[in-house]
Image: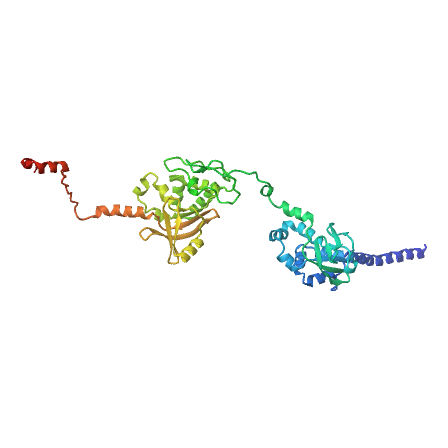
Length: 452
């Protein structure tokens, strides 16, 4: 057997095994990007006075891409000053760039300010010339007759402001916005909002119903055109108008769902079952409130608790329309919370809020660190604040039932009448004779006895 051949093969295998780790190490070492030294143009940009541009580069997650570009070739950066990005930039456009969903537009904007080559001031072309940027857009270089250098429509303010071995930074007067970014910014809006609007006449109001004959277009979230009193359903003797479907006639708000939510909140909160029963079963106010909210109106409901509702007498609820009138006096046609009402009464002392029961207003004032509604004889405190608040409906719990001042005085006098101790004396009024009869008696004295 030839042992030399065997030993030769074994030596070859040993050599290959020794070289294999070295090859893999060199391959892995070359695959990783080299480190950026402290004299790089990227480090100079982060440490320069162009802090706004440096922050945008970091927010756009472009540092790794720029490091890869610097390792392959020199770069030229056109940097606008901080003032151009802080004061001279449209706030809405800047807000658009900083939104996470518009990250691609921000990256395109910043990469359009960087060239994959080095262009110093002495290399500036005398004639018009185009250069491709890292975002595949082209920048136009030119030199004016006055000697000022320009890139696109921006003038160079600081030539060779920062110079490093791997790049150069020129200061420009303002931001350069590519056409693609402008198109993205314009497309962000709703096309219906920026499209041409056909001219229309002024809305006409029907004098019989005080309603618009043809509803004018109202944008989402805008207050309704008609006052809330014209949008309310007819009186209790007439069936109220049916509530619209989810989203309302303009599909802005789902009043039916919001009313259902706050009714459930009253039931689960505890102590307001009577109020929920009146709104849903005894009256049709829940349906009417849902219709008003669907039309875009906001309401604040002052809800008396069960203990206060139990003090109502049968006479107060038996008259036709009495429950509706009581509830109308507890509904304010504006959105108020416990904090807003307390701040108002602390600042102005006494505040009168409009109610759905015209022309009565409910009086609010500060008392014992809380809000007190009504007058001294018929008053209630804000007992359970912010039971339900969703931006359209606000429910505030009270410890009493409110009545208008005139109505409360009439009820008070009616209750005091049977308690009078002095007997009622009927006085008979002597009928007065006619004037013609008196003249006749004075003329004819002979008939004096008859006239007496």
